[in-house]
Amino acid sequence: MPIQRVGALEKIYLSPFNCLFSTVVGTHAPVHKETILSKVSLLDRTKKVQVNGSSYINAADLLRSCKVVYSQDLETCAQFCESILANIKAPTVVGFDLEWKPQPLEGGKNASKNKVAVVQICSSFDHSYVFHLAAMSYMPRQLRNLLENENVIKTGISIKTDLIKLQHDFNVQFEKTHHSYLELAFLAKILAVNPEKRGDFGLNSLFQHLFQKRLQKPRSVKLSNWESVPLSTSQINYAAGDAFVSFLMYCCLKDVYDFNLHDVLFEQTLHNQRKKKFLKQIGELSKNAFGSTFNRW
Image 1: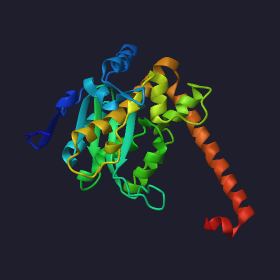
Image 2: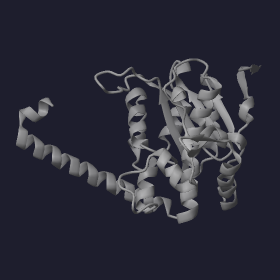
Image 3: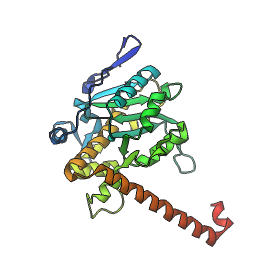
């Protein structure tokens, strides 16, 4: 992967998908229906492969018209985060995801003992950022400010689990407000995207339901070493693609159902409170029924 130095910055050009690294972040324009539809139609123009007779699409192929920004040092990370925040004046939804080095199977469980190595944020159809924390000596204050900002509403699948891990690994206080994230699976459920579906949507299943195509997510990349410096082109595109897909699906749901974001976030808060209360009651009942035996489990 060729690297060109520009002052203290590094630019890496990803020729396979014309995704280049840039120090210039333009103003994030509002998302319009035409923009969304152009991204949806892009699905029909990108490379598809046949796996077990089904039509798959690689998430990285969706990045053809999106600028992927990869940062592996404190200075550029701080600059990009400040640029993103400078363009956010009101509650804004961004695609979000994390990656960390897989832990070898222990006792049948894939323990996530390794710290978060990569933070991905897609702030618009034009930019998807990959911040390589594993290459930095600490989390920059500007990235922390971006993650904790109450106007930056992070969306994705199992988003709260990711944020809890961030809080555990880097003490990111995302719970300053309950409106700091939006779970896509919850959004799809309350919008009754598929009333016949049992259980929650995953990233692939929701994408397939919305676009009638399945995402190809190479296992070799998913389970690769996310702490290696620098990340490979395939790793960068995989990471940026996940955040982009979450942003794309949110925008499509918003366009189709035209819901009020504040109302959805409020309903999500109530849902989480009811769930927490229910689990607490279950725990108390179990403790009373099994006593110390239950606690040992």
